[in-house]
Length: 118
Image 1 (cartoon, one colour):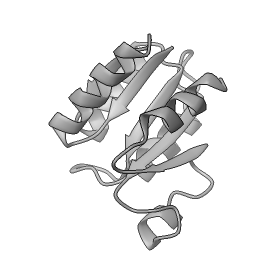
Image 2 (tube, rainbow, N blue to C red):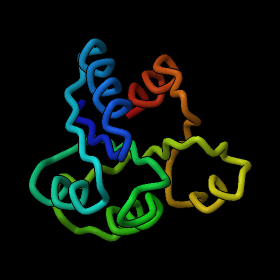
Image 3 (cartoon, one colour):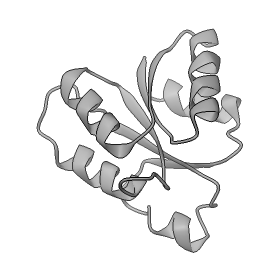
């Protein structure tokens, strides 16, 4: 599975990329919303893991734009990753835009179960 990681915390994104590679996935890290949107337009991804708080646009806006995209290969599985739980105000803003919500620190086994469902 090819996964797009969108997180402004470079160390966390890079570590997640390494963990995914250990689980036989390929992943590309982006650190801003614009980098993510550009990557999704240029490369085919199966899933996107999107931080809700990015420096240039909220992760919810990245999800909206990916959902609205008609570009072939745009990720269909969107997973919110955030310090907010799904019940916090920040997490509730993501309702309906994402297929899943994982609170940081991410449980890699749970992420593996989510990715295996696609």
